[in-house]
Length: 143
Image 1: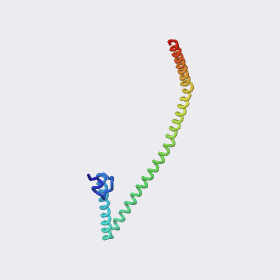
Image 2: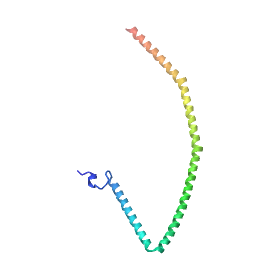
Image 3: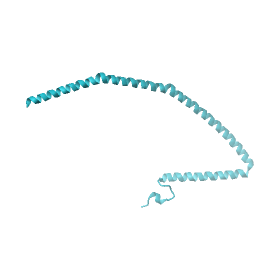
Image 4: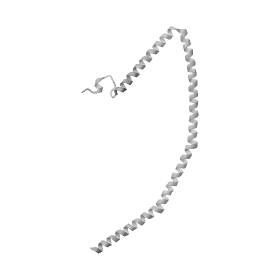
């Protein structure tokens, strides 16, 4: 029986058929992109007057793009500042009140443990010991 890695020795081991198709598609895309770039450079070198016009248009597009990226960066910084303010002014007080509530709950638990649970356990253990002693005395009489 032939293993999948034996069928195609040039393929990296452990790739599924779908991953191989994707890898092949990316390789074809990159080859076409490289071919297109070479063709564009050759075409631009043949016509220098059109090259200058295209260069100017590309410079204008890049300037507009950098303006939009700068605007997006400013908006991102404003949103980051608002998030920081939100964390400091709203989330931190919530966390502080939660910590305070947990401290109160811990104190209540300790209070109930000392003043309610321990005495009830002691009383129950005393009754259990008394019941066991009475059971032992009853068995002693019947024998």
